Image 1 (spheres, helix red, strand yellow):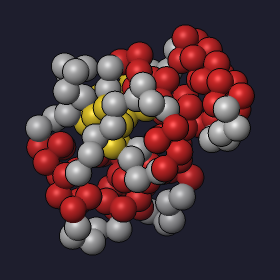
Image 2: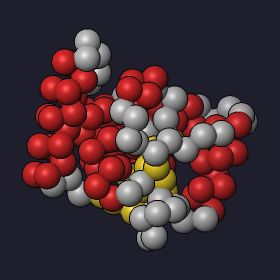
Image 3: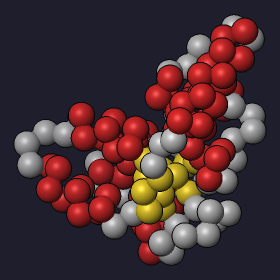
Length: 130
């Protein structure tokens, strides 16, 4: 995958997508999937899997296995920790998982497609907008 055009879809978008309501989010996710531009990281996968009910995981597993998987590195954890520290110094508190996701996007030059307002505090992060 060309990292410049890759999009990491955050769990907030996946949750909207899996509700299967036809909306603008669903249309954009389908387009990105058709273009093979979607990346997945372990933290997003974990966030989605923890909220599933019953056998929902079987239909999601196949989809997630087909995506470009971004492995977390020690560098990502260091960058996320420093990012959290810097934001806290500015009076901003966001989740460590969001900072880890952001660090992976930054390292891999990926845009993030999210509905989560926490990511707006990370100004160097490229956001996919609809």
